[in-house]
Length: 61
Image (cartoon, rainbow, N blue to C red; front, side, top):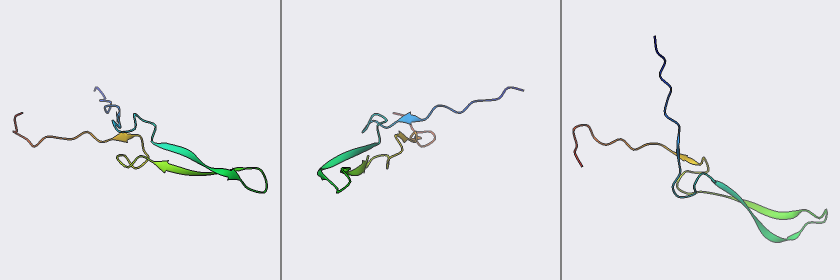
């Protein structure tokens, strides 16, 4: 019996798969570490992938 493999996840078109970025705020703490924040892609919520949209059954484009 053949096993079907699921399709690979689609890469988010908004961030091209680079879903999170560390941004330097400038300055350093008393130990010399940079102050950074992490920003996530608003389209995929930081996952880097999006689910495929399914068209309604019977609809034609």
